[in-house]
Length: 533
Image (cartoon, rainbow, N blue to C red; front, side, top):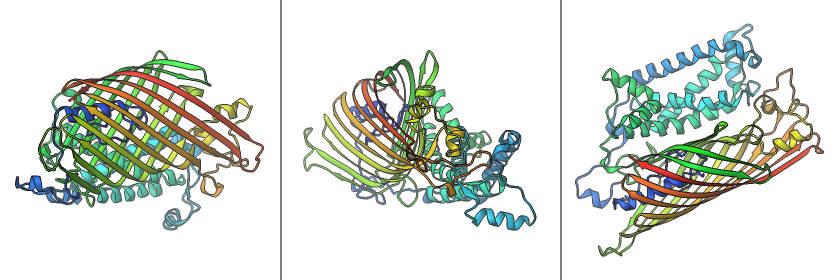
C-alpha cells in the first residue's frame, strides 16, 4: 500500500496510513477531480496568475500579502512549547539517566560554548525510536509557532532550527548534542508542521466533527487561540485551491513468502491534499504550493499490526498549461510542473521479529509531473526522487540473530533501539489513466539505504563501547496496481494489489567474516471504500 504514490491528483493524500504511496486514495482523487470536471488553470509560473484568471480581476496573494508577522505572538507560543517540553523532560529524567554523559563542571559559559562548537559534543544518539521520531512533532509545533503568526515557510524553518539548537544545547545539556535530533526536529518538523498547518486551515472549510477534530490535532495552538477569538484569520479565500479530504476503510490480506506468515486486517485511513499550484496564493519563495498527507493503520486479531504515515511538500517551481485551440469535448489540454520537494515517512509493517520498520526524512528532492486530459479522459504521470536521512531496522536482523549473534558491542543504537541511522534515496513513479468514473493506476517506489558508519560520530556509552562495528544495507521496492470506481461524488471503491520486495545485508567492519543476508517478498491485496468530504 504505497502511501505516496507520486500522482498529481489533488486527492492524493488519503490518510491511507500505508507507507509512502497513497495509491488507493490517489486514484480516487484523480477520478474525483475528473468526475467533477473541475478545471485546474495553471499559471506560466508559480509567481504569476494565469491569463484566464486575470480577466476575473484576481490578484496573486501570498503569505506576505495576507498576514503580518507577530514576533511577540510567535515568541510567546514558542516559549510555551519549550517550557512544556522542559517540564516533561524533567518528569522523565530518572528514566533517562543512562543517556547522561555530561555535567557542568567549572565555567558554565565555556561549557555551553564547547557544546555548541565542539565536534566532541555532536553525535548520533542511541535513544529509542519513539523518543527520536517524536522530535518531528516537537519540530512541527516550533514550525507552527511561527506560521501561526505570519511568518512564511522558510522563516519558520529557520526559527525551528534555532529552537531545536537551544533545546539540544541548553535543555538537554547532560546529553550529547544529537545530530539526528537536529535533522528530524528541523527538517522533519518543517515538513510535518507545514503539512498540518495548511491541512488544518483547509479542514476549517469542511463540515462535520471529524474534520474539526482532525484540524484540532493538526494545529492545536490555532484551535485554542480560536476559543479566545485570537485565531489568525484565513490566509486567503479557498475558491482558487483544490482541497481534498478523504477517509476510508478496507479489508487487507497480506502474506510473506520466506517468513511464511500471513495476516488479514481491517484498514482505517485518511488522506488530504491542498493544491495551490495554480499560483494564486503560494510561491516558491514563501510557501509550499502542494501539500499531501496520508495515514493508515491495519488492525488484526493480534492488535495494531501496521502503521504508515507519509507527507510531502512541493516547494514550488514551474507550472504550465497548454490548451487546445478549440473548445470541443474531445480536444486535449496538457498540464505539467517541475520543482523542488521534500517529505517524511514512517512505516511499520508486521509484528515483532517479522516487523519491517523505517522512518525517514526526504531531505530534498525533485518532483515532476504531467497531465493530458479532455472531457472524458485523464492521463497523469508523476515522478519524485529524494535524498533521505533514515532510521531503519536492518532487514537482515532476523537472520543475524538466528546465527546466535547480538548487537551488544556494535553500534549502541542497534542494541538500544534495534534500528540504525542511514543515508539513502527514495524514487517514486506513478501512472494513472481515467475514463469518466473509472481509474486504472500503477505506482513504483524504490528505496535504498546504507548505514552511517564512523565511531567518532556516534554516542558510545562507557558500558557498551562499539568494539565490533557493523555496516548494513537495505532495499525496498514496492509495486502496486489499482482500479477505482466513483459511485457518486462523495463515495468511491477501489481494488489494490501490491508486491513488496525487501532485502538486507549486515557486514562486519572490523570482522568481515560476520555476514547476514535476508530477502523476502510480500503480496498484499485489499478492497477499499472511500468517503470524500
